[in-house]
Length: 134
Image (cartoon, rainbow, N blue to C red; front, side, top):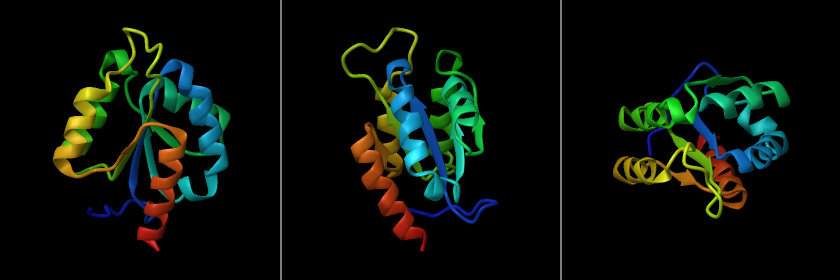
């Protein structure tokens, strides 16, 4: 895994959350704010907007998921411009308008970019990334 330098000296991390998982993403971001603040954060539109409004983090929102935000993150992964993806998904009640993880998971596997799908795996991944930067 390459560590892409950014303006904070950390990595670029992408954040996506299905509608029912957005509160979980906000709680995760608040819990790990100190570590996340060291990295360049991008997110799908609604998730990024909520993170900017409900945390002290600086997040660059892309398009919302239904408008291609998940594809923009996939493109960043494909172009070696993203080091990790946190996609908090709702496996039980995801709505048709919400991003599908299949293509994003595939490109992350092809490019050897870690992808966490829930709070526990995101916490483990974030701790590992934090150790890799140090």
